[in-house]
Amino acid sequence: MNEKQEQTLAPLNNKSKANELWRWTANELAHGIRTKLISSREATVSSLDRIEQVNPKINAIVEVITEEALQAADEADKAVAEGKALGPLHGVPVATKINSDQAGAATTDGVVAFQDNIASSDSPPIGNLRKSGAVFVGRSNVPSFSLRWFSNNDLHGSTLNPWDSSRTPGGSSGGASAAIASGMVTIAHGNDIAGSIRYPAYACGVTGIRPTIGRVPSGGGPVDAPLSAQYMANDGPLARNVADLRLALSAMSDYDPRDPIHAQLPLIGEPLQHPIKVGVLRDVGGAMPDLAVTEAIDTAVNNLKNAGYIVEEVELSLFAEAHKLWCLLVLEDLRGLMPMIEKFGDEASKINLKHNYEVAKEWWGNITLEDYKQGYARRGTLITQLQQFQEEYPLLLTPVSAEQAFEQNIDIESVESNRRLMEAQWPMMAVPLLGFPAISVPVSVYEGLPTGVQLIGKRFREDTLFDAAEIIEDHASISTPIDPLF
Image 1: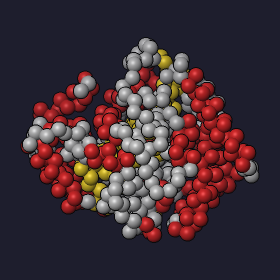
Image 2: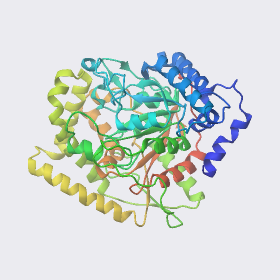
Image 3: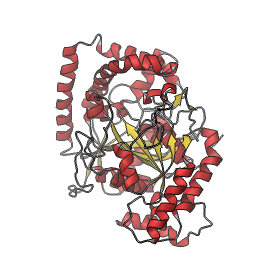
Image 4: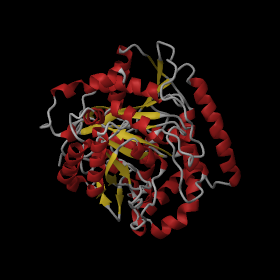
C-alpha cells in the first residue's frame, strides 16, 4: 500500500457503521470489509438502497442484480471469516456495462432485439473484476450499439446527468459515470474507442482511465473483430477518485488468453527523470477550448507547477491528424456492421452515424481501399512521432473536450451540430487511434457543470498518470457523490 492509499484510508478510524456506506470510497470499503469493520452485505445493501433512491431520477443502472449481489456479498463475508485469500476488490459493490458479457446477464448493448441475449460466461474484463472479489450490483446504460457520446436507447431509455438533466452524462459509459457521480457505486466498468470512458467521467465530474491498449484484456467475442476494435477499443474503470482507479485497474489487468494483444507488464515502472516535463496542448487548430475548459487547464497547470513539474505550452500537429484519421479507419470498419445497425439499431444511432459519415466525407472525400491501407501505415508513423516527443515530455495535458457536457442529443439535430461535437472531441478521438493511456480528472464546477482535464502518458505508464492526476485532484474544487440536482 502506498502513502497516498494510507492517507485515503485514514478517515476509517473515525467512521462508524452508522455512516452511509455508499459515500465511502472503494479503498475504504475494501479495507473495512477485509478488517471486519463492516461487512460486504452492509456495503452491498447500502449500494442497492442508494440505487433504489436515486436511479429512478437518472436511469443509470438499467438492470439491478439484487439477489445475486446479496448472495455474492454473503459469500465474500464468509471468505473473510474463514481467513481465505482476498482479492483487491473483495466484497466491494461494482457496476458493469451492458455491452459486455457477464454470466447470467443480458448483453443488450441498448438494442431491443438483444434483450434476451443472456451471456453464458464473463468477458475478460468482467471476469477479472469477479476474480478480484467485486460484487456486481447492476448493469449500466449505453447508447444503442454503444456508438454515441450520449446514453439513450429505445430499450432502456435515457440516462440523465445528475448535475443537469439537459446535458449528456457522456457515452457510451454514461450509465457508469452517472451511477458513480450519484453514489450508486464507487467503481464501474467501462470501455473506450472514442472517449467512452474519459468523456463520461468528464461530463459527470468523476475520474476515468483509458489504459494502454493491451493493459486490460478484452476480446473473447464470437465474431472476428475489425482492426480498429482490436487496435483502438479497450476496457477500463471509472471511479470517484484516483486512488480507486488505481485499485480497479490492478484488478482488471490480469492476463486472459482470449485477448490477442494483452501484455502482462508491471503496473509501476521505473521513476521518470525529474523534474518531469509536461507539455500543454490546448488545441490543434479546430475547435477552440471555451472559457470553462481554459480555466480548468490553467488550474491544472498551476497545480502541477507548484508540485515541481516543468509545464510548458507545446504544439503537436500529429493530434489533429490522428483525430481525422480515426474517422477514416473506425468509420470505414463500421461499414461492415451497418446492415446490423440498420436492422436493429434505434433511430438516433442511425442518424448519428449518418451525420458522422457526412462529416468524415468533408474531411476525406470518397475513401478507397488504398486510402484505408495508407491510413493504417500512417498510424504507425504518428505513434512513433508521439513516442519520440515523449522522450522530452512524458506527460501531456490537454482538454477532455473543447466544451463542457453537451446538450442532450445534439449529435442528431443536424450535420452542423454533429460536426461541432466531433471537432470538439479531438482529444477523445486522437488517443485511441494512437493507443496511449489517458486519464480524465475533474477540476472544478463552472456554471453548474463539471470541468476537468485529460493527461496522456507513455505506453504502459498509467502509474505516472495517476501520480499527476492525484496532484490535480488534491486541489480540485469539485466533490462527488451528489444527489441529482433536479
